[in-house]
Image 1 (cartoon, helix red, strand yellow):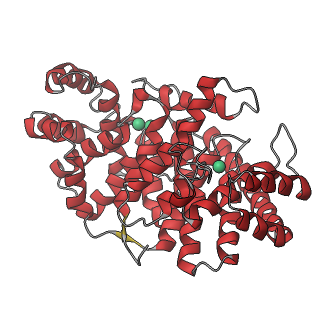
Image 2 (cartoon, rainbow, N blue to C red; image 1 turned 135 degrees about the horizontal axis):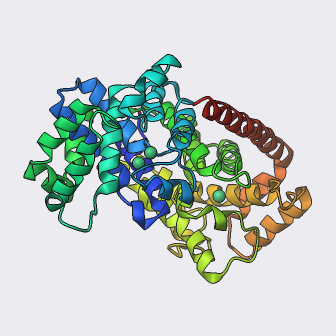
Length: 424
Ligand SMILES: [Fe+2]
Ligand SMILES: [Fe+2]
Ligand SMILES: [Fe+2]
């Protein structure tokens, strides 16, 4: 991966797409909301910089709805509790300082127009972008995307107009009413021209590797914080993978790429319902197939990111085995790069060594026995396993201290959200 090679929009689009994996009922929700929001913004003559943050916020707006239930609940037009997932999203996004404004927009994306004063009294500013996303989001929820769009407009406009000046900002409703008559907009939405429109606004916004690490850290939390069972897994894997990369003499840049791959290796797990995620044993064949699919999604979603280099392979091939018996592609030793082999070992080592609420992690000799046995069967790379044996104490102590820190972050994270939620 070269210096500043990854367009910010590509990374955020990939992460946004992963958020919609959890149910076929919501596939494409984030990108459609971003598209509708941007069209409204153009109608309102928003500044280009504001439009950038609007697009990113819209692409990530439900990032805090971590469970399948949370995501399906927000499909109701009248939400019972709209603010919890907005607060969770706000807390996740603000972990990365350059996302401050985006996190503030996400926090308020369900605030009704006639409630803005109440938020202002609590010193919370409700940005215009939040109000735009609010309307775009509710329109997407009302739309039946399998049917012809323009024909549904009369009915949807009626519902929206009823809430003009109550739920929704009247100027934004007027702007949408205007653009909803444009056939071209609906055609663009239908023909995947959305990306062209985004690129026109976001063209030169490239990320360097440190910014990528910081954004991947947010998603590491989105993946892991869904369940206390897995709350620290990705950070543990990333730590072990980086250590192995360092010992084997990879360059500083490659080690940073390894960190991103480790943080995102289970990105596709966002499509696995929490109920299955938390089942310690006894998965049915169907459930196991769902779990197995996660790597395919990690691989295919990350692969779309321009300039990402080998990160998508390292992340997406961690369940492949050298003897061809892994998944999803049954790749063999000739096709598996050193980085992918490191990730496979780091994932297994972390999974068997970390404590789970239903079992204790394996100690040194037991864990190494499992890994060496797998190496003997030519499933994983024996040289990497032997590096792990040589530097076991250093690697394992590092893993434990990283994971301990994340457990504390996890507790603090939910405590803060509960507190803020009560005060709304
Ligand atoms: Fe939402
Ligand atoms: Fe939404
Ligand atoms: Fe994993």
